[in-house]
Each structure stands twice: as C-alpha cells, then as structure tokens.
Image (cartoon, rainbow, N blue to C red; front, side, top):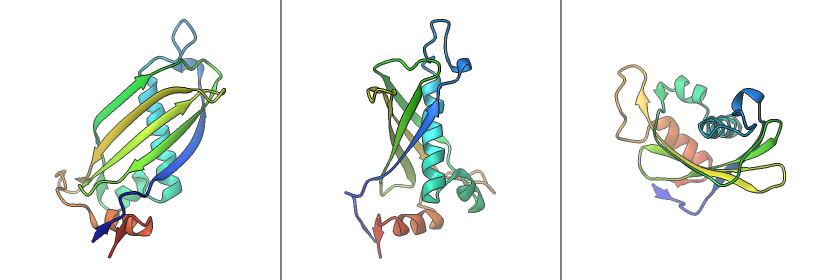
Length: 146
C-alpha cells in the first residue's frame, strides 16, 4: 500500500457555549475545550463515516492516549464557536486529530491535538496493526492506494 501523505481531511462545525460551561467570570472553563474537541471529532466522524458507532460496529473502540490544548483567547457564554477538525494521516494504528476553535469574530481562541489508538472490544487488546475497517476507510478517503 502507498500513502498519500499530503491529503488533508477536515470538517467544520459550530457549537453554542452553554452557561454551565462557564466560570463565575462568564468565560469558558479551560477543561471544556477538550469536550469541544470531542464535539468536533464526533461531527467529523459522522460526516466522514468513521464515527464511534462505526468503530463499535467493527469491534473496536478508540480511546484517547494523548491530548494537548493551547488557549489564546476566551469564549463566553452564548458565543457560537466554530470548530475545525483535521485528520492527520499516519501509517501507524492510530488516529491523530488537530483542532482550531474560533470565536464569532473569527479569531483563533484555542488549538489542540488528540491521539487515539484502537482497542478490540472483544478482548480489550491494543491493536498494533491497522484494523481492516480503518484501511477500507483510508482507501475510500484517498489516503491509501492499493
């Protein structure tokens, strides 16, 4: 198989900041950005056919093993934020996503990255090779030839 490493797959969605996500100053508490990353990842997965339910249907879960977030500006209660989720291809048996979150004015407020691995649901074992369903997905998305 040959990788097409320059292909970028993205999806953009929006979320509205809820009151419960803010601190007493009315700004989003920093820990909620990880949830926003998940919102972006779930929207990406539904749009591109690689959702958590798709993975489960193929006998896998994909827990996060690493997450990074960098905060630049605050979001506030009621803001409609835009989340750009980018799949970063890798020849390893993992999924890497990068995120950019923008405020209503289009300013970058947070960036981040998550790394997920594949674990079989039946045995709970880490997959050291790329699962067949993920190879099929990569071929469909033009990430693999052959």
